[in-house]
Length: 433
Image 1 (cartoon, helix red, strand yellow):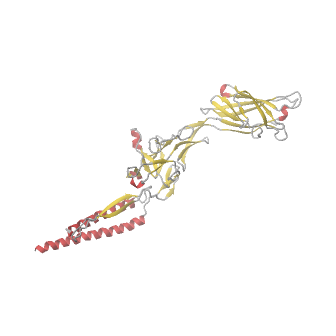
Image 2 (tube, rainbow, N blue to C red):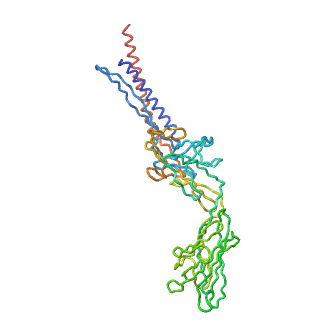
């Protein structure tokens, strides 16, 4: 019985070391594979209880584990959509074949790196057919609240490279100086005109036209102007009329003293804002707060639009996309504007090494890995997302070659045990002769 158990132990040793050699071969073969995680082989002894002083060899068992929580070095690339995770967390991806099949939400897989690019349908997909998943943004660029313990809110990131976009103008600021001499008695009282371009909800260029009419008194100075605002999108209909009175004191001379609303939205003296009803919706115009000199002023003898600013932009074509460290996918347009279109979360699990390993360096959460949670990149236990980068293989070739030598020696030794047992059994057979 003891000799037979020795034979079984030798066979088990051969099998265990063959398993270790297979893992070593896999590691060395993938030493240049981006995102590859090292497979480690552990041996555990099998003990068979014995009695009466005899001993039976139990042998050895080999178990393998993929060290998914170990990361390789990051290397720089030239593509903005080459991604790698620096620190904890993994990128959510899905198979493009499942998306094209349109059989509902595809299975969420996880990976730590990928070289993504737009395909014919605009999906950010890698050469191995993995599509990046993310939360879609609202038209204003904000990300709604999605559930964090399920992948139901994730969508394939789809970038329409032919997309055009514009932003309507919702606010503008007027920094204009009015000539104080035009409100003096005997002045001609020329009307001053100002036209400011804005963009409507469809990206069309329109104009807010503003006329400044001085009040010319019989004597002295009135320091008063009537402002009429019209909108070209409404056939130059009047959308606001105000009477501006300026301070002429030593400390606040030239600044607004009061604003009287004739028509249009009311003026807020604390903020300097008034709101007019433009064709596309409310338009907030800042003319300066009472007593401030950063809006409309009345000084000297010249009309000068010194500072005109506004938001919004005309229609432009998308030129490229970039993904920042917090996972926000930003689309850039040739008009100079940018817009957040997706957010890529990072997925964290209690036991990453318990996931099921699949092809193309992807992993599937399992009961052994625990429940996953979707974090904003950089929050909680997660690291950040690095663009223009890939993660190298985590394999240390030198260690693998050393382990190969040890495995070869161990395999040879176990083979020697089998040979010795065979010779001993032959001797036992010879006793009969």
